[in-house]
Image (tube, rainbow, N blue to C red; front, side, top):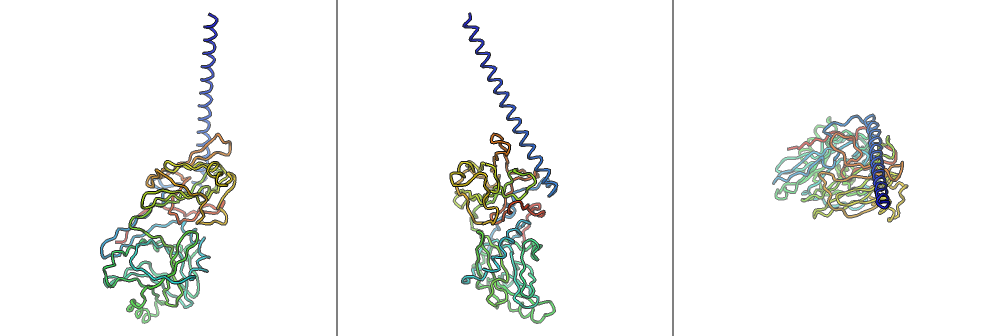
Amino acid sequence: MKKLTLTRSIMVLAAGIIIASCAKTDVFEENQRNYSEQQKSEYKANYVAKYGQPDANQSWDFAAASTAAKTRAGEVVQQKINVFGQYKQTVRRDKDYLMKHINDGTAKDWNPFLAVEMYIAMAHGDGNSYRYWHLEIHHNGEYVEVIPNINVKGNSWYHAGPSGTLNKNDHNFASIDTRSLTSVADAYWVAYYQHESAKTTENNEILNNRANYKLLKYKECTTNGETYWGFDCSGDGDYSDLIFLVRNVDPIKPVEKRYMVEDLGTKDDFDFNDIVFDVKQDTYGKQQCIIRAMGGTLDFTLHIGNTTWTKSVEGVAAGYNVKTMYNTQNIDGGKSLATFDVTGWNPTSNNISVDVVSNVGESVVVNIPFPKKGEVPMIIAFDTFYAWMTERESLRNDWWYPVTEEVDE
């Protein structure tokens, strides 16, 4: 009898411990959720105060803003590419280097039959009075303008970065496909200039003889992992007249995106450089992640499809300190902090997220998924040439606008 009573007592005590343990776990999980939501709410309020409330249909995947042009036989296929205020940051980062080095090296032969995405970055005067640079494609007796007039004066430089004089020319970004023109005998590109409107005779002489200004050579310059092409429009051997950032489009285009993350370490900081990583899928379906920057001092775990990477585990094994920020000052845009294979990434659904260990304790983890349409973003996706900000330098107020697609037929 006593034995039975003792057994019952032990069972009751054990049950009490289990119930208490479950209650403690439930309370902890609830507190963790509450803390996470409180942190996110404070961040969202600060974001809206700075940038405004996002439209309910606003997508945060800007890498999908433009689609590859389709080739139609015997035609120039030209498609407008939308760009964002953040593109100006890329130009600002690279413009000084381009001014010094665009004419380095040997000029390359121009291939007029290609598919390429072209983003105007800089223009440079040739020392004369006002000139208007033109880049056009000739086929079937007609000229297709790649870019509108680019007005330059004297020896001045113009750029598309912040405060630059090209920064409002959002129509100067286009996907061009001339691969189907290879059977057209008279298909070629031209680069030429026009004088001020008063010089009608000189302008007409050039326009009537544009075949004399065939584009035969160009120069290529690479910096921060990006490629720029320089064109000579005045025929003086200087390839800085027009400079484009270029992105080649393959017949089967590889998919690549750059994800920029805010980790809630501070809730009034919108530099989106706490974690910057690229995910790429080649034409054979192989996927890879490249971590470009780690601007936070909190531990984190990346979830990319079926793959995870943790700063305190894989990062420490590679020699990184969890509390140290990497590549957010004196930024090297082509630097790889870590490169690893990925499986299961869906570039359409953006099945990526980040778990961040809170600064209140290692046991409190905040999960940051890729944002849904209309939500205040803590992760944004760009094409991989978009530059990230330096530490504590927020994205520009005009860094985004609603995604639209416009096709020039």
